[in-house]
Image (cartoon, rainbow, N blue to C red; front, side, top):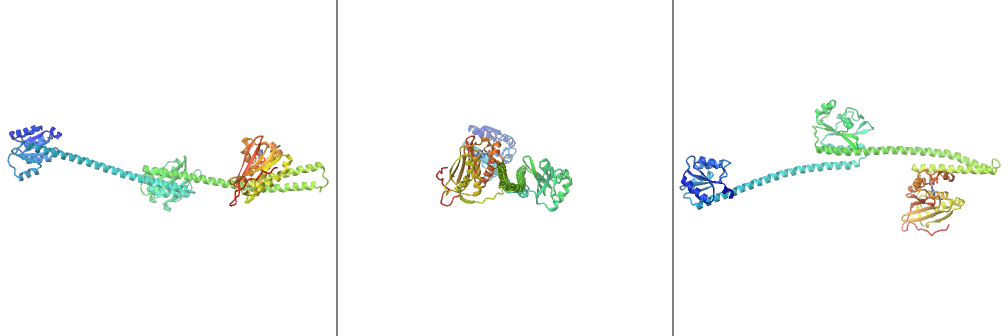
Length: 586
Ligand code: ADP
């Protein structure tokens, strides 16, 4: 209402008195007034947007119906309410005529001021409500349009998300399948099966690097035989071929249509067309700066790669390169391993032959020395007997050395057979102790031992266990000048532990790991007098490990060493693996 109060009311009447009466009534009600005396003037002033037009029925130039019709036809004035005033009685038909022309109300003279004011107010209120309604409608329409736009955007986003999910699913499929691919052909089949439909290609091939400067076709899909004449031959990298170009440069090469082919590789354009293709793309597979191969794709129509396609292509080619690299390294490793195994076998055969060749004359030396010793070739003087003894010791030493070397070579080549059985540890320990008795007595060393109970058993190769224990005891005596050698057996959970302790020279910390390596000796001068090859511990540890155990050492220089052989105990149902027996004095 305030809005309309500020806008004037246009009062149209050719008679001044009539205009005066109406104007007074409305001014008193607080409305500003514009006045017109003719129809044409009314039309002109109406364009100044009055709040309402009060229109006399009889005008001198154009009649009020005409004025009303024109007002309603002009978009600038169409929304202004029009109130007809008539000096005389107007028949209902005539009123209907006026209303048809667009009038919003009718009043006849004599004009009652309250009626006029009330009618004007009512008309203005109605118009205001109408306008508010229209504004609301426009607002709703705008909201509806916004909603539609938002819906469209959502649909687009959903489509994009779906496409992304599909690409991700493809990529996951590629990753999962590539993980199980063990050959180049399997990799190629996985990659092409996934890439062709995703990028819309009809033909595809995977080329892989073969040696340093050659490409070889690993697999192709979707190409008719005629489209691949001679492509399965090795391709030199410097050949003028799209795939060689792409691998050489490490960059993707897209030939979107035949025109591009004609411009770039005219010699192949016709072949490509005859095979029924238009576009092509070659994607190099790189991993860590190394090109492992390339995927070549052909399209029946011109091909256009969007950012989504590039992203997928890049991810797949990278995975493909990694898989190719894995297979390449795996094959190289297999080749090297096979070569090493062959070399090992050859070494083994050589050693077996050599040891046989050496053992025969060595046995002959021992045999002849014995014959001489027995006096078969005449009487033997004391000095000669002494010399014969040295010959025999040296022969035994040499024979032991050859046996050690042969044993170690056999272990390394995995050619040692283990015959497993269950036996009481105690028996083995007693046998080994008996064997070192002469050396121990000769050096006047004390011996103490704690043997396990007869129920403590091992599941292992009895002979090999004895060999290891004997080696440890022999070393203990060999490297101890005074004091004692101790053998302790104990059980620990499922394991049986055998400790060989001595009060000898000990092993410097920096050598403790190395002594288990073949041919390593801490002090060569010492072992030269004490005999040895530096193979005993290497063999012993290999044997221990092969039987599921371990050999370790603790030592202090000048104080002594403790070697511990750990082996899995054998448990029979319903009984513990073993128990420690009471100490048996030396
Ligand atoms: P070998 O006894 O034939 O030299 P081993 O492999 O049995 O070969 O031992 C390697 C080296 O480890 C020995 O030469 C010696 O230096 C050191 N070693 C082994 N056992 C002991 C020990 N009980 N005390 C001190 N040093 C030892």
